[in-house]
Length: 246
Length: 246
Image (cartoon, rainbow over all chains, first blue to last red):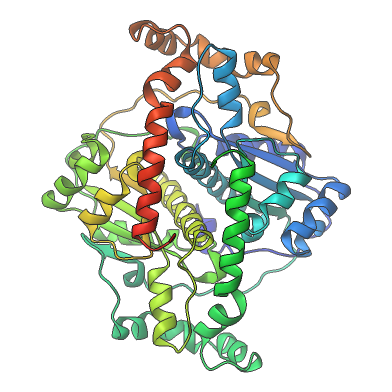
């Protein structure tokens, strides 16, 4: 899996299509990923049509990749198929609860990442859209997701038409803990974030946004408390609509 | 990533240790996985000590792999390091909410799966413990996880001492949907689950448990409604304790 060293998020795709056989092979191989009780608590909605992409785009704040990628995949936590199976087999399903949502979301996200690793190894470029859980209700409507199905990840997939620089990562010591959690001290924080904060691209970002620190870009602009709190409410509302909370 | 074709969950490990360099390399490479805003909203607690494993074992219903594996990894959704960074940099973090938990859990699970793909390719065997979110409070205590850190996945890792048969998977049509979600009919269910239900190992499982159908094994024994509802409550309690809900 040499591709892990050089992977980057790809937002620009060339015109070349993804052959249906290739996509099916990747979707199928990714299903070798471990899954709870071997139940495969996920489903994937494949969007190739212009109308389908146009319907999804607003849910992703009209990020251009949704319309420009040849394929958009919406991966869903899915306890519906399993529950329907149970109902068809004289069994009483009990998966309309938060734990079951988390079980299915876990299955779906593990599947998603194996797909990403396989697809990138095959030369495809991917952008993971974190917006999926920001406006789940819009996606639920666009894809006609029934109860006990909930979108947790969206991938735009295509052949890369760009090669952006590799993004930086924090040092291992910042996220790996030996035996018990080591709560970072201010000195640890200085050490962990020094490189990230000193990158010219990040310093420029702070300047043009009129901020004092890089952290303020995240707290004041990209992921604000008020946005997070509002989106938490819509997220819970969507969980309720899909039958995972009552 | 040829290993995806032959991977299976490994629960028995031979005595050979995992070299610290090898583990660090895998933990480091996995961090190339995409992450929200490049914030790396996860942390990994590495348990190698006998005492550490003994402290974790009850949280995983004393499944023997926890004590017999040379390494146990607990991967956590972590908004604490990022929040501490913000506080140290005159920025006001706003990540004590459900959306932020989901963002961090997503980052953590994607990271987890790349680690699994890489480790399996390197010849290691892994068991993913779904029990992590069943008794999060016990894990939080054992690993001394502070607020805004929440365990979402546990991997027992070692060199394989068994080669169990490959497990079955549902046909692609059961989990891939074209453009919109296709709600499975009883006929679809028959088609999707025919192979799984006809496997001798599953038929035997139904017989020895005195059940009528395979689905009943899941609904009546493995993942019951009453367990799921009770565990949903402790899960929400743990989210509250860790500061993600109020």
